[in-house]
Image 1 (cartoon, rainbow, N blue to C red):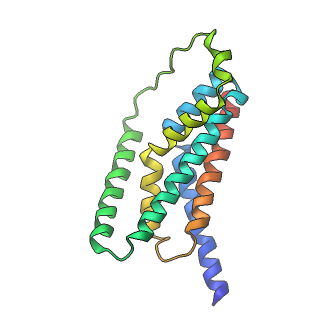
Image 2 (cartoon, one colour):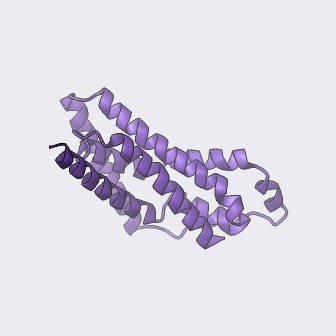
Image 3 (cartoon, rainbow, N blue to C red):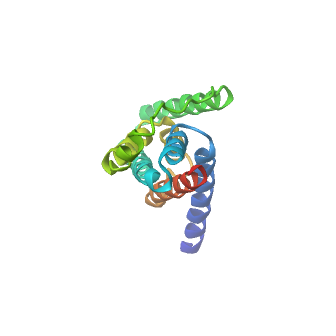
Amino acid sequence: MIADATTLSAALLMKFALGYFAILATPGPNMFTIGTMAALRGFRGALPFCLGVALGAGVVAATTSLLLDAFAGSEKLEMGGRIVASILLIALAYRIICAPAQCLPDVTEAAVPQMQKKWGAGLGTGFCIAVTNPVTAAYCLAQFMGPLAQNNAAPWAIAIVASQALLFGLLTALLFA
């Protein structure tokens, strides 16, 4: 019986990771920020943004999980959460379909060496961009209320979000540098 539960958890986590990979592969604020910084500053200059995005995505996943655990059993909260998650996922689909061309910020060559020295600013900016990106929150909310609701795999899912965000950010920086 324990082997069945472990197999079920592993299968759920693999599906969760695959779904989050699709979220990461969709161009959005995290990818544009990392790509822009890598293009302007090189791979090393984009590292703080990658770390900040990974930390921010992990915080979003952990906060979502903790909030849902704190209010577990509340039918009104569950229905409200499902409605919010649905609206966010529909907004994401609309954003993907109607994505306008993104513009790179205007940065002069003289400002680039100065910006490379500010690791804390890059880390904080990446963190804030990831925390305010509703896509990760919508995905985690939908997953933690759905397939992962009655499973003890949430801590692993949080680790998956942070590690996938970091690895995908590093890959994006490597490609754009």
